[in-house]
Image (cartoon, rainbow, N blue to C red):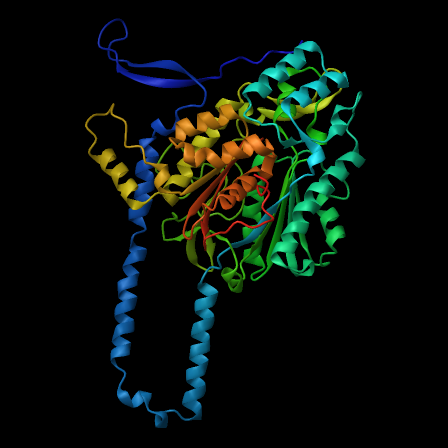
Length: 563
């Protein structure tokens, strides 16, 4: 029998009530469990042990900064030994000239080799499906009723969800899923994947003018549809990419896979400097569709819609002049020795970066954010948090079959609570890397000079770290909860809400439709910082921070051109 999901989501919070003053338990610590509705209040809890640990790392590695004045002093001393005779042409014979050119070449090579290459977002494109695939909410319910796939209870449930979903009447859905007796078909799935992926890539190639043979790295991500040959092989075959292409196909990683692909591309570009990386993010709705009556498996039907995005990245220094964004990096010796990793964190207790907020015992990101690039320490602001070691998180979203053998995505009633904990861990890790020094000083001051042990520390304002925020367009309720807990204004949430209304939840490509919305509204100015935040099955929460290299103007290929 189908289990009806509750109207309200509850999440527990343990509250320290201090020491009992009287009674049989006098002198013992007392705790109570408070039940919250919606996401946990993750911005109000701070683990002071790890706060002090983070500042300890900062102080212990401060000696790196001490080398700078010493090097400047030595350089200045040597320069002071130069005389005017050294600048006369008579001083330079053939040997001196060759030595000078040799040292100059070596100096330039070392400087360029030791300087980390920035990763640029040259451009991106989002797929705009044809108008004949547009579907209104009323039409959805009418077709669902005529399909004969659902009983009355399932139809009423979908009607209630659509009413409060935040999805509008111009989203896109393949009509084939409403055919009576519809079952998943590989041919249909491949056709949908091809139309979405090729539509986005064709537009990107036309906009950038890049030759397909110049692409060295290809990453395709799709959550549910995994074919043989792979989707990445479909792209290679279509565009006749080079035979030495570094091809990757990411499957089963859900809505957060788009940022995972960016992180992977950034790592691969370090191995292949000066190259181009193409990322294609999509989801095949005809394979996520569920034609049964289990209520927990009907939610994806109501939210998932057609969409795809193609993104071109490069770390070629010459591409900076025409690129739109740069993957934000902050240089500094803040990464503790012994905690620098460039490979996946397989469940160790290693904290990430300089952790100022939250409980790092529960925050075990898949990748650390401190990396070495030719002995230069840099903070790459792609932060990936994985909660898969927790059984509740692992089972919150999963592909399964119902009692009748019909396959679909099951969304647990605990997904909001699980997402809240993953979001808390991710924001905790990202905060020290992006917040201005003033906010961190306010926090440190409140920590050291707090009035009492029960007073809460200063909660930093994350709006000071970004000019724009692109949060995965999941549902209206989820966006409401994240806006409340992150204390964001309506302006910050505009792109996410408008994308949900116009295109629905397009899975991993959703954050790119949101960035396209900001460009269409001419909101991206030179120097603006954009925070992309996505959550997905596993359970994962990923963040990426981009910095606008130039003021981005609206162009005709934007998917919002009709709006």
